Image 1: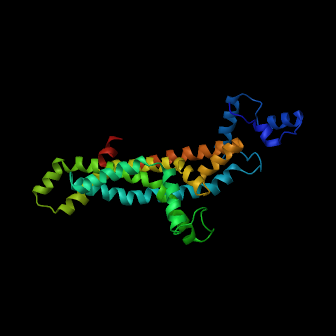
Image 2 (image 1 turned 180 degrees about the horizontal axis):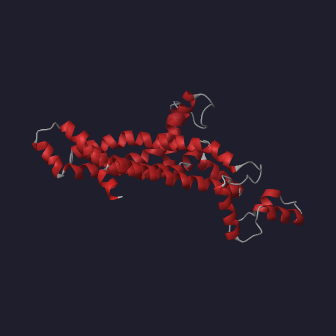
Length: 286
């Protein structure tokens, strides 16, 4: 439906009709779409995602090289967002209708509303161009962990900023609900310390919806990181898909999308298993 024939892109405009027909037969492009899909899925079950149209390089190898960059960015982004958003939501719930609660509300709405690509641009202008604290592009020198971390700070900040608000609002709502439960009132009536009630009883239950949100957030960041990877010129699955769409390199696009979806399903499954492990009510209902 979009401009760009895979055969013409792979062979160039000067290929003869005979060569084009032979290549189409080799890649099964002369078959119906359902037949092409069945062949593709059969190869996937054998660990074969196809080959790059231009270099004839294995797509599986390309995915193995690019995926760690995207996973590292997603983990870093959701990690720092959780470290900031969860305590902020707890404090907001413990001090409702105070200046801290209102500040958290404004901060949450503000961070959720700002697009990650806009945060990326302003972060580059402020921390890289003006202050010269951070590098602008790239993923750092291979083998140099400190340099790679230095290059990771700005992209992780830009991608994770919006999730600070999501996590803070989720934790606040969960904590307010849990703090009104009967067993929390009973704990207070028995004279337990506030710190024990919050961290041992309330937060343990209130954190469960947040774990699910973190799993969904990590999966979303795998696809949402494309803006940061493009703006910061970082390698990764998102930038790879963007480049391959421009060049109409369909086998790489198919493999990258399939790997991203599979990883999303895997992460959300892990999040659900963690919730069921922490909450006996969920475990017993299975």
